[in-house]
Image (cartoon, rainbow, N blue to C red; front, side, top):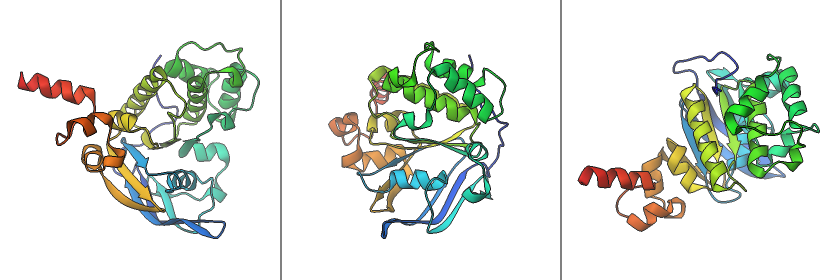
Length: 268
């Protein structure tokens, strides 16, 4: 089955995420200190940084799930006002899969979860189940979501969010707890979503996933952006965030085994 966006997509330079002077204050502490960020349409941007750097807060603020102390968020040139949007309307603009995907899952079976998403987003019956099949392959529809593997729960939550047809998809630590096979499936899904026109931002510590999937890396520290650029340039220049391949083969700016194989093929 194809992994096609549910909602009609807009194209052009306005189909992007723009954050201007975004401030978030929690418990009297400035967590984001006036962040400016623009993400191009149809790209994958990785947000990296140590724990507490502000990655998850940035995603939560963009998704209108955290209060903003100042600044603006725009999707496709529109200002996102969380108070003016119902939850299912908000997901059609920007959808967030949190670190704990089970927070999005409320029913007793996979099938009920899919049917509930179809109703919530007012899409044809079977839409979410079709997305899940395209993402994960066969999953027993009678299983309870809590009995699924970490990877399957993520895939189910992702299918639920995609049923809303978000223009921008946000993923918070999506590879946490996943085995190698689940990571490979996720990487393939992200590639297909971008090809279908979705803009993606993910917060992650998984440098190998970033090297394989991302176009751009934004590194945060103490609520501010400290590095921003093409994935190859930023990872090669940042030892703390470089993939193992890069660390071993410096000064070559190779990120993946595929990069090395391609380079060796050219030199043969």
